[in-house]
Length: 390
Image (cartoon, rainbow, N blue to C red; front, side, top):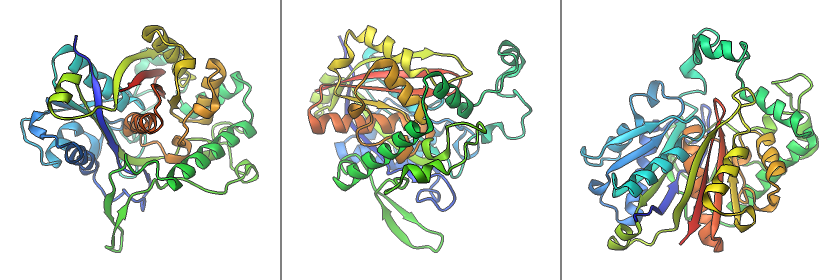
């Protein structure tokens, strides 16, 4: 029986996804190439031995179109014989990329694969692929009719989830403050150093510097400050920019192979890909998928929640993670212990790989046997992954 193990995982620091953000001057193909090259250099990987590069990206338009997974390979200077694949499962695109790489390795279609993803939201703004389209253009008239012409909006969905689970503005804002505090502590204690591949960037004045620290983390915030922010999705709502994920730029990559091939190459894997699954959920609230995804992956893995020492649940909006906590009864202290997307940012197509990179290094650093990752996805879907420390 072939297995799938993750040898290493690396990411860029996450930049603010706006003009002037640290990574805004880097083409997304080049940003992808940066982590591909870092992964190869860290592990003595001969790129010619890679059977496929499976790459997540959400806004596949403009600079991120035409199979950016392929152009990432070429930008990295890897042999032309190495193919690339681009996946869109919305925010879970690069988590799904890991699932497909693992499936390919287990089935024997691949011996060595690289999975990951990228998003440059400063250069390819969120929703730009829909620009100029009429109402319902991404969904078509049959979907619009099925859901009674309801407007699909993640922010509105987050408001609906907050109402369903009785989550107050103060609870959401406190969750955001906790995320920033955890991320700041992780930075101060050097927890991200082993996973980050620093990027040399050039500012508008032509000055070069090394960018090596996640850019979106804020320190010293208060509930009083966050309470002043508007709630754009609902006039009397609870979801604001302060308790929603940040638009961001970033990339991440993971090296996936079998235990036998890893040993033959002298690699010591971090973890085994234990179980992966995906579910569909209500596309109107859209963001509750991590709850049934967790239930499904626990059934398939044969594990119980109390066997896990860490959870990475994407903080797309604060109601998503707090609803997941309420539904599962998980320990809040084990959720996103190094901060989440509320603080670190959410570079859409890279986020699944970024979360998994952070989870893997945290598991190794703290001797945690089982880790679980799940994230909500546009259209009402969610992936869930169980990793087992080696």
